[in-house]
View 1 (tube, rainbow, N blue to C red):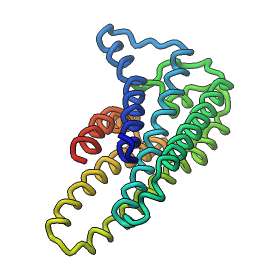
View 2 (cartoon, rainbow, N blue to C red):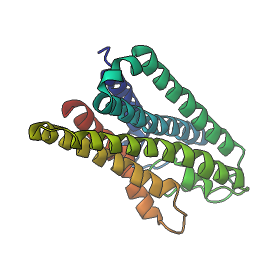
View 3 (tube, rainbow, N blue to C red):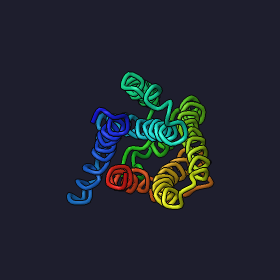
Length: 240
């Protein structure tokens, strides 16, 4: 378990457990009890931990893609580059950035006034539908959502695409057909889950509100809050 990939998988598993535990239990309680009530404090708590674990998933997927790139494309430098100290540093940096980012968004929500409708058209306290209920100006919140959240979402996504681009190039240089057959299915399965996670998340947070309806946003949210964490153990653990 001291190897980098297993260390990253352990952190991804913990992040996925936190990710699902933030949203699903409350949703199941709402379905079973028929009551769809949540207090203001509970809503802010759910908002914070959802942002934390969603961002952490995002960064860990990027770190894992970089680890895979080093292992396949530059194997002679792998032991020196992805040593235990470097892995701990990358994971710790991911935790620090995501904790600070989730805290900033949560604190910005606390300065808003909610004096109108108090019904969130969603199955959890997500940032975008919550901002639509505010009576006061959400300009700063919208700006932070586009600039900071957009950067933290697109940056790791570009890192993943770049890593897999070089991985595919390295696989194409493999002379053995059997080696290519082993490598390509793993890359395509990993990319399919990553694509599902990012395409739905980008559709929810970076598209204009007029471009996507509330129903579509809820479907997209289910895909990256429920389906992706469910697939991660299969794709990254059993298949790997």
